Image 1 (cartoon, rainbow, N blue to C red):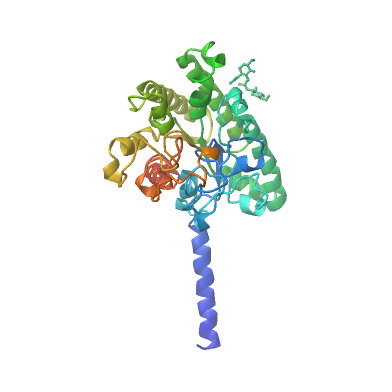
Image 2 (cartoon, rainbow, N blue to C red):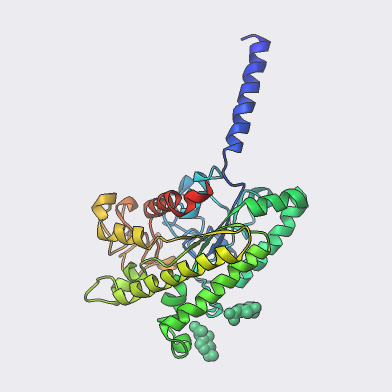
Length: 349
Ligand SMILES: *[C@@H]1O[C@H](CO)[C@@H](O)[C@H](O)[C@H]1NC(C)=O
Ligand SMILES: *[C@@H]1O[C@H](CO)[C@@H](O)[C@H](O)[C@H]1NC(C)=O
């Protein structure tokens, strides 16, 4: 190869690299929420709710347990990749990463948290208001790193994903009398939705314009709830009805917000239907087990009870909808991400 053709080749490679970069549809994906999207923030705090040990992460890159509550990646990781951003979103509190990494995507989520401050207190995890404080801290660092103007562009063009709310019911309302003695379940839904709307208005005020909020999943179908409702072991319809009611109210609030807030685009990533379809029609997706999880007995274990010492953990998690008694497998997470990419999030492509 002559020097001239080598230089041309080099130029071509550079053009392809630039085009590759331009192809990213958003400059960053910014995540708030609970264990459905926590990439490892809980590793850095004092809580018993952790998953940074095997067999968690056994199908992640390098088989590494990261603190994600799954055998592999989370829906948010797949979504980031689909938008042309990186294939995994780093946790803000993870000291391995710096603002250079966070500039293209960052996760503030904390397993076990909820909209309600009382929910995050149950297992001493990061409350939602604190996730917002970390986000403000991030904004400052991003401005120092890129300059105010470029940071502002990234923050307004970024995609914001919010996934939270299940724990307010499963870890709080249905377990302790504090809230259930004061609020009917409908009133509690409204209380949480008030916090959700305030949160979205807060991040809007700080510059967010593209927001996706996930409603509640069919939480009466997670293996832990089925185990508790034995001997029937069916999905607990009472819990699923709460999720459906909550999601309907959320949809109405989002319609209102889109009218009220100038320049915002908020969508609801309603995953209730797709998750229920996987549970009701597992064969369609190649699943074999839906009512029990892969890890350990699959009935009750999660976090420290789902560990390497338990010999019962299944070999092939891709045959299961649930990885532990509360959380989906990587395959389920992929299907959820694929679904929202083709529905609600398609508007941001
Ligand atoms: C939750 O706690 C924070 C910090 O103390 C407080 O600012 C906020 O008002 C509380 N939220 C609710 C709904 O009580
Ligand atoms: C319920 O209230 C008691 C007494 O105020 C408090 O100690 C406890 O932490 C609360 N639990 C929850 C889940 O809010």
